[in-house]
Image (cartoon, rainbow over all chains, first blue to last red; front, side, top):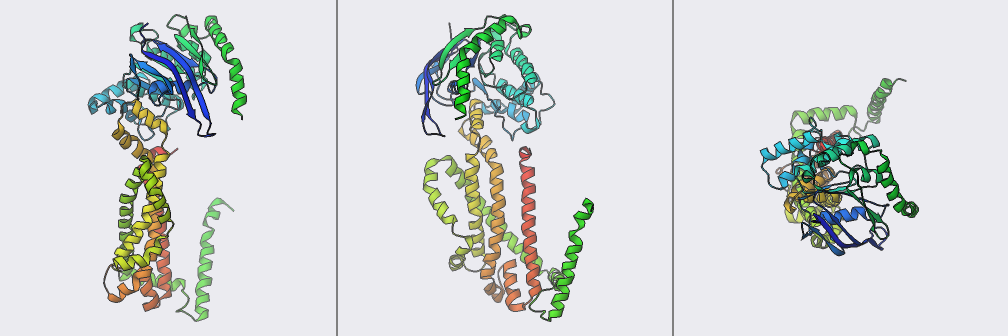
Length: 268
Length: 260
C-alpha cells in the first residue's frame, strides 16, 4: 500500500510539568494511513492519542521513531497538513472571515482571491451570513464549523482532527458527523477524499466515520488492535445498524478494563 | 423604600454634610485654617476665571501623557523581548525586579539633581512610574497566550513574523491595555508628588511649565489658601477617576472579542 502518512516505531517521553516525573506517553507505535482513508484513533484517557496527533502535525518531535508524509520525514508544522483542535483554537480577535482566510493569507494568496475562496468555504460549512461575527458570538457547533472551514480553506491533503466534536451536544454532534462525511466525500468517488486522522473518545463515532480504527492501550500508549470497518459508504443509513453495533462492542471490549482503571487513576 | 429613593439617598445626606461643614467652619472663626464648601466653590470660580486651574491641569496632564508614552515605547518592546527570548529574560528580570521596588518618588532628589526643576525631572519620574507596569504586563500577556493558537497559526502556514504580528501581538493586547491602565494611574499619582517636590522654586522663578502640584505648593506657601488646596485635591481625584473610566472604555472598544 502506498501510504500518505506512516508512523514508524513512535515513542514519546516527556517530563510532567505537574509532578516532575518522566511519563512515557507512547511506546513503539507504527501505523499507516492511505491517501483517501479515514482513520480514527480511540483509546482510554491517557493513552496518548492526542500526543500522537501532535507528532503527526509536527508540533512536537517524537522521542523515538519517525513520521513520514509522502515518504518525507515530518520536522515542523506544514499547511499541507491541516489541524482541527479540540476547542477549535479559533483566533478570538478575528472574525469568521478573518479566521477562515488566515491560512491562504499566511501562504501569500492575494486579498481578493483569498476572500473569494474563504467565502466559498464559509458557505460550504453553512456559516453564510456570519462572516463578520467574532468566535465568542457563535455557538459551539458554529465555532466547530468555522474551524472546519479554516482547515478546508488551505486545501490540505491531510486532515488531522483532535476530538473536534467533543465539545458539542449529542444532536449537534450527529449532524456535524454527517456534514464532515459529506465534505470529506463519503458519497463521492474515493479519489476525491483526503487522508484523515481523527482522534476521538467516541467509539460509535469512530466506527460510523472511519475506514479503520486504531485502538490504543494506555501506560504507555501502544496499539492494541487495528479494526477495519467494513461498512459500505455512504453510511447515513448505517448509523444505528447491527453491523456497526458489533464493531462498537468489539472495540469497547478491548478498552473497557483500561478505561475503568483510567477513571480511578485520574482521581489521584 | 423604592429603588429610586434608595438611589437618590446620598443626595440629602451629602447636602446635610455640606451644611454642617459650612456652619462648623464659620463658627470656628478660623477661616484661613479650615476650608469650607463656599470657599472651595469661590476658589473654583476664581481659578477657572483667571485660567490658572486649566493651565495647571493641562500642564500636569501633558507631562503625564508624554511620560506614559515614553514608558510604553520602552516598556512594551522590552517586555516582548523578555517574554520571547529566554536570555533577555534571564538577564533583565532581576534588574527589573529590584528597580521596580524603588518607589518612583524616591527618585525625585536624583531626578532634580540630574534634570533640574524645569519639568524634565517630573517627566522622568512619570516615565519611570509608567515603565514597570508596561514591562510586567507585557511579559505576563505573552506568557498567557494559548499555545494552541500559535500551533494553529503555524499549521496554517504562518512563519515566525506572522505569528508575532497576528497571534502574539493581538493575543497580548488586552493584558497590555490593563497594564496601560495601571501605568496611567501610577503616572498620575507620581506627577503630583514630583511637582509638589519641585514646585516652589519654579513658581518663585516665575518660569517653566506649571502643574497642579506646583500650584498646590504656591497656594500653600504664598497664597495660604486652604480652599484652593481642597479644590486641587478634588480636581486630582476627578482626573484619576476620568482617566480610569476612559481607559476602561478604551479597553472595551479596542478589544471587542473580550466581551464575554
